[in-house]
Image (cartoon, rainbow over all chains, first blue to last red; front, top):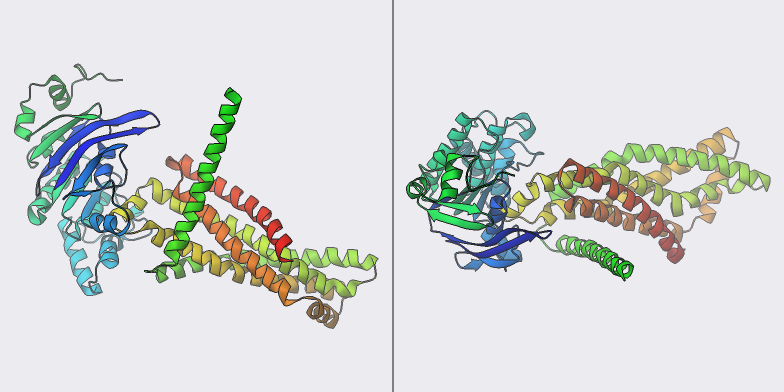
Length: 248
Length: 255
């Protein structure tokens, strides 16, 4: 479903990705872990076609995202859902309008059908009652949940989550990850989840990949990752300052 | 050699930026001329750029006309030709002051807001979110603003001119004693359709220029609040300078 092949990317001479390759099968969720500022979000944006690689390819069901343009790219992208770190809700629209926006713009549903779908989605993310509020009037957790509702409202085949729990307290973080798990079971999307909540996501993802120094260090099922003997993986999962990963 | 290399690099960078700006405009016109069109977004932008600028345009128009009436009367009085006050005020407003001042006011009021809005959407990933919904940000953000600028600027300029002419009459006619018939009658004799059309062409081109520069600066604004504030300042300064430069060339070609 998603195949990443030898992606290289530099910004102003700084090499962020140095030959990343992996694959995510249909219906799987892959958790992407690694240190902050080391290219996980950049990699996710490559998958969505928002950034073009210097070298390498991203294939979505055989379509090379790096070469697509215009209508074809729009068509592939409309099969995506993307949960941004900041939520990226349109701040001039209410929560309801934000969730309804992709339906109004990309489908021929009637306003009544849209209303039904949006309210169902808002119910799923426990936001009934906040539908008429603007993003500036709700909390960070509610913004993330509203953004999750918006990204899932068109039943995307591929979901990309960019640190969905960053900046949230542990209870809300856990609630959001549980929500992602239950929505995955309901909708069956293929996903990549960039996260630091290692213990929490290990219970529901099928694979975990660790990005280290611009490359995939290891890609394994969560149980094997947890018992990995690799010193870098061990240090990262345990969250130790002492070890082969140097803290600058 | 080092200096030549630096100069070459600077020239290339400048050319690259101009090229990118040019492509931005070509893309905007391409999407403006092909469906689907976002009429609701267009109406919203006309309301924002046009309707909401009416008060400031009327105020500046009134006082520009009044000062023209005052200065014009004292100058013409030296030559005993105060009867020509009406044509002087009208021609100055219609050919120059109206289009230029309206464009400068719209740049300050709406252009800066356009850059800030698009810039904030850029840094908060809202433009990326649009793209990922399979929607074209140009159709949603740039084209409605470009078309609204083209529609609103000539109308605002017309309002500026009319209010300014009456402002000139208020000072020249009511305060300084130029007769109503003389003021408006001479105006009708001297103002030609070519003058009016020239002013309209100017304001149309200023509409494109303001929205082009301000949208471009917002779309490619830098990171964070500092990036957006820099982009907004650059947009206002560049638009204002380009309005005056472009006005000179338009005047030399049109009149």
